[in-house]
Length: 154
Image 1 (cartoon, rainbow, N blue to C red):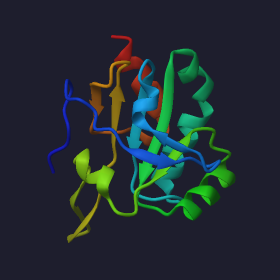
Image 2: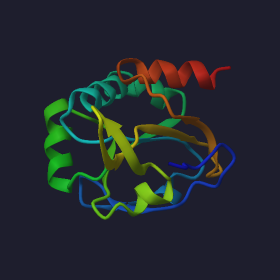
Image 3: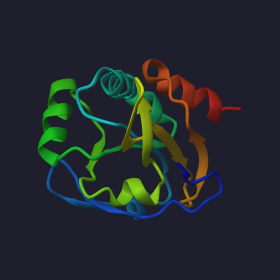
């Protein structure tokens, strides 16, 4: 798997938000964006990561960040996930895997001797000008917000 790197221009993409409004990454120019890719709604690691970002959402907003999560789950699945955990940020449904491919997070994975294609859990910090400032290839799902804040304050 070859993902985008620090210094690369973040590819723009469009999505429909939970209110039915059309959004795009380019609408967030001028703000810092935490763009996190996760394998699947309602799985232990993904739940922990989303809830950690939720619990620290106001602190992240106060530091100038917007949060956008992306997976291949459907909009209906995202709606249930958002409601179940009271998630205040955007979740992008990429069922066609276009964004996943552009960011290089879709690829071969191995678990218990089995090889399969799936989403690699990665987070990209995108600066106000639309460039990737930091990549987190090893996400600590239970403390991801703290991981981001510590790295960005260095």
